[in-house]
Image (cartoon, rainbow, N blue to C red; front, side, top):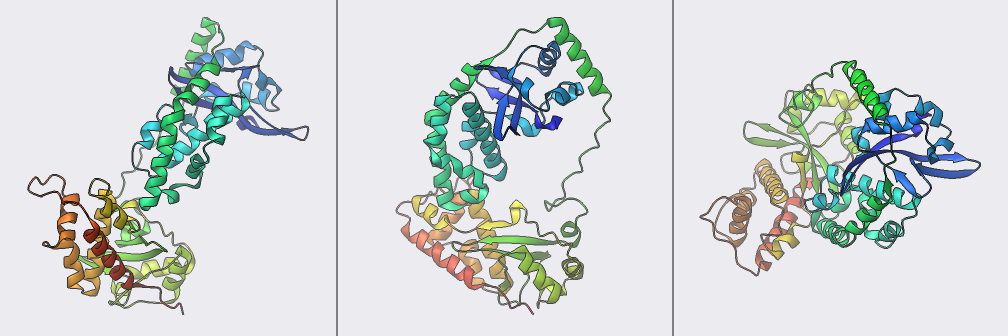
Length: 406
């Protein structure tokens, strides 16, 4: 029950502060949520030692009514430190929104929004509740990174950034204004600091983190050891999984040599691997180990970022101009097209993204080689390049198929 009260750290305009949060509890058939504070003030401290000293001092506050308060108050001093997952850099939200979204940044912003909204509701801060209730677009981050792929996803991300740019400073000011730091005995603060240092010194040495494997998988994992990677391909209307390895420089997909086999779920891919062989990848010596894992149910189909190919939305970005195109996304898409074309022996398709001469090829080379001062910037309009790219993606879609599962 003591875990029902959580130390948190908040990054605010006037600096980082630490306090306590009771996310939710039920009492007398009512749901409650609270922060350390009294009446209209939320108590926040510059250090964990000050927080511990305040709790030890026995001063009145709202969390004393929490059913777990006594258990928490008697905890070891290290229980008062905010863990990394409970540190919210509210000042840094706008900076994160200024970068391209990824799973980490979307999750961090979601958590920051959630804690800010919770404080606004508990402390009845009209500025904060109006900001969230009046801007439903902000709720998109709760659905994760899937909302922000492709051009439409980036438009949504930019819309959230514009909304935050207009109102987030007022939210931060309202949160800062409700914070209050009560007086604590300095001798008690010093005693708490020494107790924390003693407790930290008694902790066992953490084991060193293993270095990441070159392929992006944990060292010693099945995928890292067999040299075969799960890949994800995202088209406009569907997302697929497949497998690929390289024999020398030659890409080999799960497939029959004319098409790569793709599946809409990890379960479908595993079922195929357990009960079927293909005509190319199954000839690789390590393939049997994957088949065994699929058969016994231990296969974990995990796609790393460098093996996720998002083709959706690039045509519209290309049409808007080179400055709009996500270079990393485009580079991965070109890699996939080249690999699939090589796998099926389609030299024309491979040359469409790796050769030179056409407007689209010049466009791709310009975007993907920003340090090459000899390349001329393409000139608008870019309708022709976008149309040619759409044709390429259509050709790629013909190179994948979902096989029957025996």
